[in-house]
Length: 130
Length: 242
Image 1 (cartoon, rainbow over the protein chains, first blue to last red):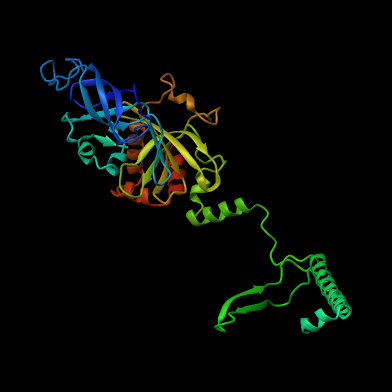
Image 2 (image 1 turned 135 degrees about the horizontal axis):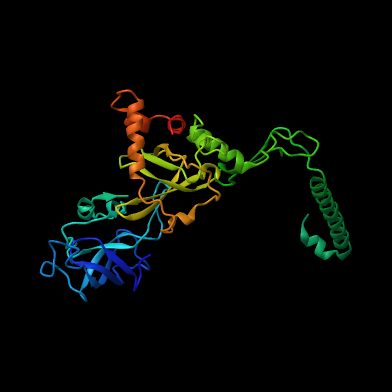
């Protein structure tokens, strides 16, 4: 249930660490896994956290407005077979306007609802899906 | 009866009209009594009565209706008594269909050897995907909708999943590790708190798989067969090993 002002973790190596939801793309009240949102980068990933993407390698800066895909939600998501999945945090992956991921790597589990929403590029980058 | 002579002779007109009124009364009384009779005691009709309605102009069958004897006439024997608890019998029938061996029912029955909250369970999917293991936080017993809640950590992020135990996509449910002492709560929601969180159960699953491989005496496809086979038996087998 991602809505205006929701704070999400950014789990790719684009340089953003914490982002805030600014808008849901499309006629939606809340965003769920696989939905596209507009975010504002609130906190950059520290230079020591990412060895390669330091102060010079960060692709986004604090205050940037970017598009993102929600990949984990704390709200329960029900699947067609009746099983339900829920994560402990809200997380997203930054993308550009064309829909390609800005980062080159994702660290962390993503929801497999992305497959249904046709975000296979993000799924293939993810180390695991649940 | 022509109306013109009647109009000329008022007395006979009165007579005729009186007669007509009397006749009408008789008819109406007859209708009323007949109606009252049907409402008072519905006569049990033997065999259904078929009433065709033909079209006057084309002489073809326009419509039809049939009157069937009512089955629940007092005094006559009812055909089949309705089940005592309809919903319960429906659930039983569905469970029998989805779980013919009764292994899944047995795995989550309220018995000593059944799985309980606090146990580490592993759910295998039929259609690909990695099996999901986690500590069972709660069991929702609702007949055919019976479901379990598993919690695990995948890459430092807590993940919780509900699984319907009678789902055909769930190929198997196995007990990886039993809780040493019985949990004193029905729902272990406190295990979401950082203080009580078990963390990842990956090492437990790994150790269990390795031990199973040892016990299965050099059968390399033990894991695969176990995932496909009856998981109730496997669950109890795992319990014995534990």
